[in-house]
Length: 326
Image (cartoon, rainbow, N blue to C red; front, side):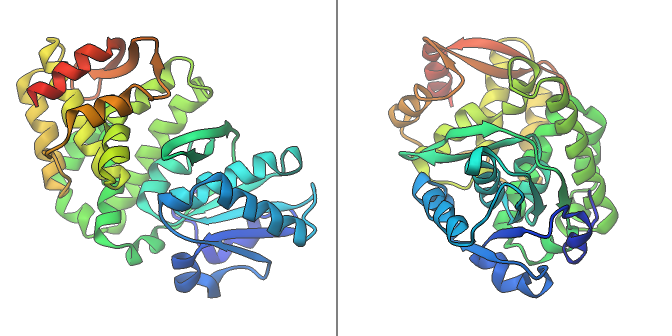
């Protein structure tokens, strides 16, 4: 529900027995708008997205005597949504849940699609489930208190959606970047809505990522490896990953140099990184632990034009050579 409000959450909760999960920042800013219900507050950052945090939440739910009739709502960004979905899907073998998404990255990506999980030993989302929330509320007003760097991370995923499936949306991003960065109501609502439309359409056709859904990983193969080794935010890592994936697409004769430059220039317009120094060996080691790896190959998303993509099995050795060229 793009454009719905946090303070109208109660009309969507189907149970009187509700538990809210949020983080310290959202609680500090918006606790007064929460419905009257028990609240479990967790920390912030990828470091808390672990099985240890999950264990603490399970204990809190037990202490509250939460039952199968309970309904859990995650109010926050991607980390809160991922953990809430994972907890709700596994507590008592599963209770229903919903999200109020408070960050741009979460509204266009993490809260959509039913992927829920936690990190393990520093590797992203190694433990998790596919399970859909009952609802997702995208309150655009909550974006106004986001730090600029976190807001920009959401634009990386918006660019990704346009690059893989919607050339018209890509044009719109180019023409309206100043309004988008200022959170112009009409522009940001259209971008969030179009991103949700693209992602939910793909998920509806391939929920468990057996085929088409893999294209949502454009920029994420290198991106996750960069995120793991350099500790950059997810959106910045994906931005760099998209530049590298576009470069590989050019090398394979699928994408024109002109379109690759358009991608780099658009990311620059949204103040996202497109170049970085990195240790190739570290990135390669992280790539070898990628969930999409199959033997010596990885399912890799390439572009064959703006708004069009394909998935190929790429040898790890070839990815190593791409990094060398960059």
